[in-house]
Length: 422
Image 1 (cartoon, rainbow, N blue to C red):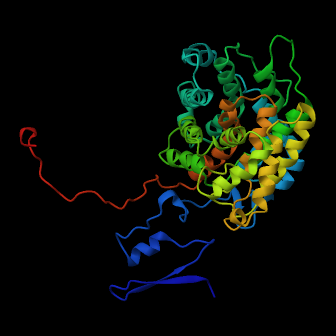
Image 2 (tube, rainbow, N blue to C red):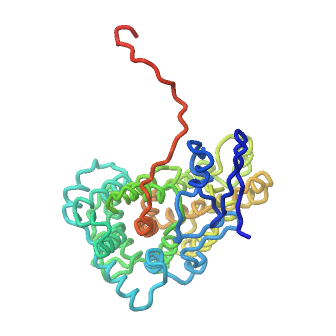
Image 3 (cartoon, rainbow, N blue to C red):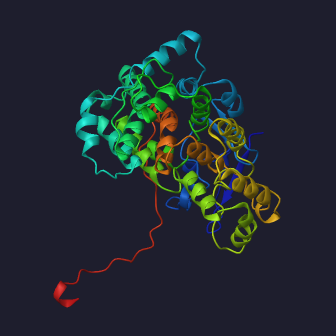
């Protein structure tokens, strides 16, 4: 027997039976019984806005899968570019497919000279790198006019390759500008993560070869951040994409959502919290203050996860590998002590406040030399693949333009009063 629910309108006694499909019920069926009555769901905490086959997330059991593959297996065995291919195409590539894909990405890393010389150089000297990235991604739509042909498979593929390839170049350029250093061109002899590190840190040497362990650690972080279902920035990508805007404009909207401290700035907030705590000795008092409602435990808890974030476990191991090379981040001991106390305290465990992906990622980025302002930029680079996978999916589904309803709580109709009589 098919699963279903029955809804009764107590005003009239009328009923309707609605099937449960893929864990949801159709709001359009609800409207057949209750036209003009809307679900009130601020923040979309209980509303599915789409059907998607990109990412599966079970927050109760701490499960994250890309196209069915567990995140733990991908982080251990795969690479970011392979994961990007998987997200966009639904299957892992063959050797030949991956060679062609990697070649396409590698040889589209350069940005138009006018983007760098006339656009990026026009920002104020202390512009935030993420603000520059948001603007630069949007500006790309004016350089690639074929991007508006979104239903042309060849054109669509070209824009996807361009965005994934150029995002690290734009990100590194924004950083170099913000610290007064000259732009570094991509080195197409390097892999994706190593090339980005070269564009970030190269000074005068003919070739910058990043420590392979650090490049690998960054690639693992890129895998972990490649997608995360219908989060704020992905929803922004889908909403703007539903209007059939070009992918650069939609991606810029997603970047803008990520710019907010509640989304892309979460790991920065963790670093600032650990710095404010100051030492391991202060951790118990800080935890006690949080329990009394003073301050917030950053990096713990998640809108979706009600158990340990599976990405956090992987990142914790990655942090150990990074610190063996860079030396231990002085904030690590505070973080470990904080995690130890919080995970043994019923106050936090009963509220299902466990470390999330942001708790350790910031420590790794800081140990590798990235300034705090670059943290949301580092988030945007890998998430581009996930955003584009969702953008492509919504177009293939011929999704309706996003247009949510509201519950009006304003004034009733009233008559205009001339200014002299007010």
